[in-house]
Amino acid sequence: MAFNILVVDDSETMRAVIKKTVNMCGIEIGALHEAGNGKEALVVLEAEWIDVVLSDINMPEMGGIELLQAVKNDNVLRNIPVIFISTESSQTRKEEAESFGAAAYIKKPFMPEHIRDVLLGVLNKAYATRMLAEGTGGGTVGTEEDDSCDF
Amino acid sequence: MITDDIRQKLNEAVVEVFGTMYFTPVDLLSEVPPEHQWHLQDRYIKAVIAYTGPLAAQMELYFPFSLGSNIAAGFLGIDPEKLNEKQIVDTMREAANMIVGSLLGKLDPHGDCKLGIPAAEMVKDYSPQSVPPGSTALAFISDFGLMWVFFK
Image (tube, rainbow over all chains, first blue to last red; front, side, top):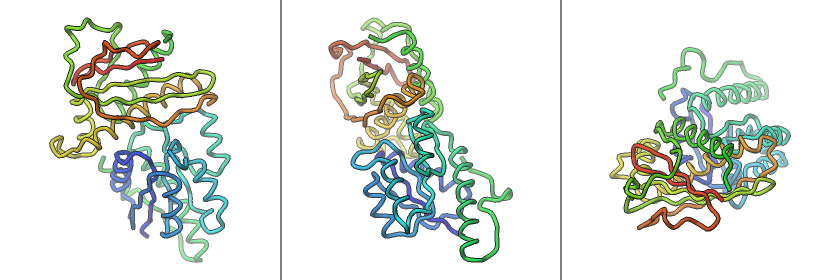
């Protein structure tokens, strides 16, 4: 099963690095989309099937928290997991993100392995949910055999 | 005025960001070196970022061009000669964002302050002699020249 991933960050460089990291995670990727802020991300989410969003918080026009709120308030999008990758590292900010329904929180600067581990965990959960919804078998994303990460 | 605590935490943040993301050692000098040791470069990447709230501050960071281009090349996996100015500026803007975000996480663990959005640009003929009013100058040593931070 291939997953479609949306990377949201106002830094083009950071988007490129996150995409590169995701590509090296051993996860089968269908499409890797990107957006420069929450507003652009919503346009992509309306047009494409997205399995998981990796988003910055502190962005111009529309930040990550506002994006998450918009996703959770939309009946079609609400089950898409949103993982934050942010410089904002206070416990309060993490708790705030979790209270709004963030699937996980990764602090910048990050180790690529951390993104892989979090992404695998979140996708496994999402994959199980989709399998249940479709009434098909189980399985995991990134099993021990393909857990290698070429960082 | 910068306190010893902020100075130490800022250095921790700089070391963490450059070490974790860019594998480049950068360290705070105990004092600003004399002018003959500055070895100024033609171009610097200037990044400005502020945080507001109970601990409000603004920081200007000046990264030597060679530091920026080497980091951007390694970060993006591109030959330094093939990089464009936008990629270098964007890389260092994000570096500034991570440094000040990391500093704020250490100074303000309860999240009472709000981190601003950084701005960055390439500047020519920069000199640390032009200290922004009310700022404290800090110099960091790297393999690619001195990096300057002005804290207000």
